[in-house]
Length: 252
Image 1 (cartoon, rainbow, N blue to C red):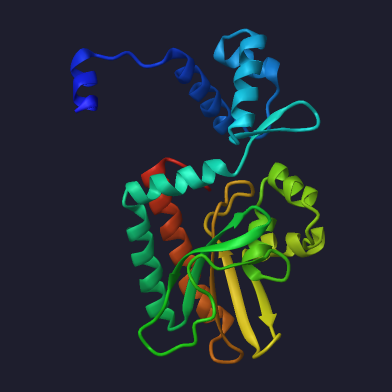
Image 2: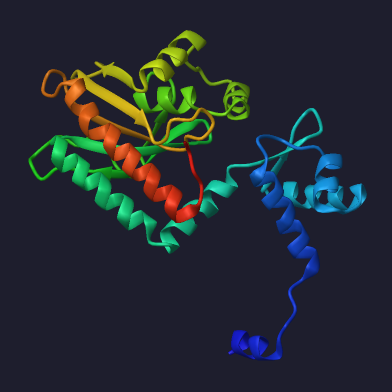
C-alpha cells in the first residue's frame, strides 16, 4: 500500500543517495582503486563531499580505504551481484548448462569463484551415472594446490592478486601462473586420500576479466584430460556468453 501511494504521489528519490550510488558506478567502471580527487572530478562534486560519501561507504562495508589513500570495492558487491543473477533467472540457466556438460563428460563439473581468501563452489553438475561426489554447492577450500585456485589466481587483475597476497595466504608462484595462462587450463592431482585428477579452465580468457572458473574431477585414470577439456572449454565459452549477454559484463 505504501509503495502504491508513494508511486501515485510521485515521491522524489533522495539525491544524496543517488550521488553515493553514482560513486559506486564510477568505481565499478574503473580498472582499480581510485583516489578522492579523481572521483570528485568524475562525478562533478567537491572533494570534501565525495570524501564524506566514501567514508560512509567504507563504514557500510562497500569500500576499502587502502594504504595509499585510494578506495576500492570490497567483496560485498559480489553478494549483491549473485543476488541479481538469481533475480534475473541466470542461476537456473547456468545450472542447466553445467548439468549438460557433466552429463556429456560423465564426471562432476563445478563452477567456482574467489570468495575472500578461499575458493567457493557456486554451482555443480552431476551426471546421471553413479559417480562419487566430493565437492558440493557452497563448498570452500584453499586457493593453493587447487586447479580452480590456480586458474582464478592466474587470471586475476593485478589489484586482486595483490589483495590476495596481502591476506598472507600461500599462492602459486609467477612461473606456475604463467604456465596456466599459456596453456589456458590447470591440472592438479589430489592424492591426499584416493588419487583424484582435477582440470580447470577460466570462464573467459582475458587476464583481469575472469570471475569464474569451471572444473571437472574424477578418480585417477578414469578420464583423460583432453576429453575433459573438449567438454569444459566449450562449456566455459557458453557460460561466458550467457553471463555477458545477461549482465553486460564481458570477460573476454
